[in-house]
Amino acid sequence: MTELLHHFSDWYLATLGQGGYWLIAGLMMLESTLVPIPSEVIIPPAAYLAHTQGEFSFFGVVLAGTAGSWIGASLMYWAARLLGHPAIVRFGRYVGLSQAKLEMAEHWCTRYGPPGVFFSRLLPVIRHLIGIPTGILRMDFRRYSLATLLGSLLWCTVLAWLGREVGEHPELLAGSLHRFFALVLAVAGVLAVLYYSFVHRASAR
Image 1 (tube, rainbow, N blue to C red):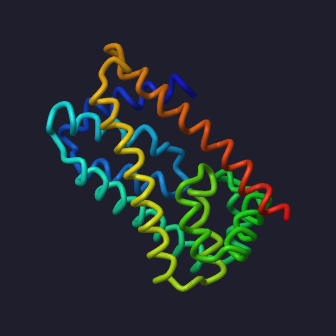
Image 2: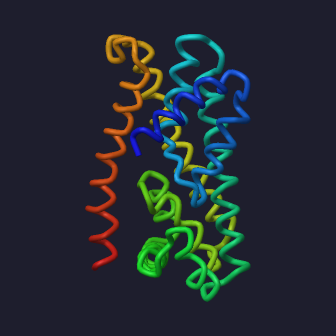
């Protein structure tokens, strides 16, 4: 997995200058579906380049990431709403969506509603899945959109801030962007612990 992320980071950094905000938004759109692209390797490098090379603006990176996240999350919502629960259960296993994961996400959505959608944008795994139960349960799309936008905005801002901070303290990299990716993946590991602590325990209760 680490090697794949390194290959992805090399490709991303090589094409980011040409792809610009559209590439950031497109990858964040995929990240909000079932495509396993961590946002931790999309937003921070763009914010880092925004600070060190001036190719982008900090707020432009945040807005592009937020817009892409909302589009991907909206696609998940409407696909689940149109397909319904039986189709999701039947075909979900082919894309790594087990019935257990789906039930956990449905429980989270039913119990916490739009605030749960907001906090799900800050957590690994469930961030990619939350559009499915909300679509199946037919949550009001306007409330879902608002929660998604606010949660994605906060998450992208935190990641962009991390990228800018590394740009302001180059000694953290020691000349290697791969160390930067190791740093943000360490942050992702902390979030995975939060995911286990809050989501699984909340679902168990």
